[in-house]
Amino acid sequence: MGAFLLSFGVIFIAELGDKSQLMALAFATRYPAAQVLLGITLATAVVHAGSVAAGAAFAAALPTRAIGVAGGIAFLGFAAWTLRGDRLTEQEQERALRPARSAVLAVSGAFFLAELGDKTMIATITLAAGEEAFGTWAGSTLGMVAADALAIVVGRVLGTRLPERSVSRLAAASFVVFGVLLLVDALRG
Image 1 (cartoon, one colour):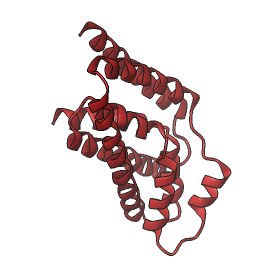
Image 2: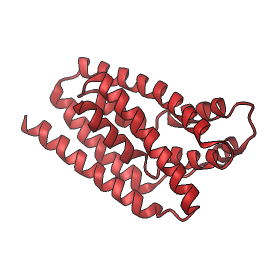
Image 3: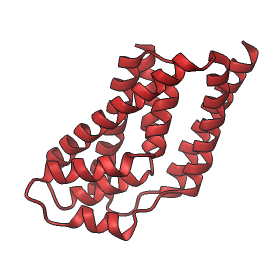
């Protein structure tokens, strides 16, 4: 349960202001929200399963202290990445607005490609290196889906008036806290 809650919280925060949240908003203007969320869930479940497998492989191959230090540094990097911000490229915007026969397949495909190498994927790998695999997978998957669902709901209510900069700063500060805690724990142990 600890791995689930930690992964849910970290990935939820990591997803705030991320480009895939922007994609969720774009898709939700074109397709029913339930189909968008199903597509996001399918893609996220697959990407995060691979991420957890990679994290578990790192955990088996590297000493715990090295993983803790690398994880702490990675989270500090995620803070900087978050402050830099994400924007949809023209190609990603076009893909999100292109007509498709199946909204679920369109969303799944776009999200799968967008998440490869994204900070939520890397954060999941980092978490899986030190936490239980199933809880990490379930928590990271549901954390991302919840953040994207929130974006869809808030986006429909507020339109384009989301305070992106404030959300990014809050997410970056959370990453700094997680990074420092990981580093302190790794260097103390």
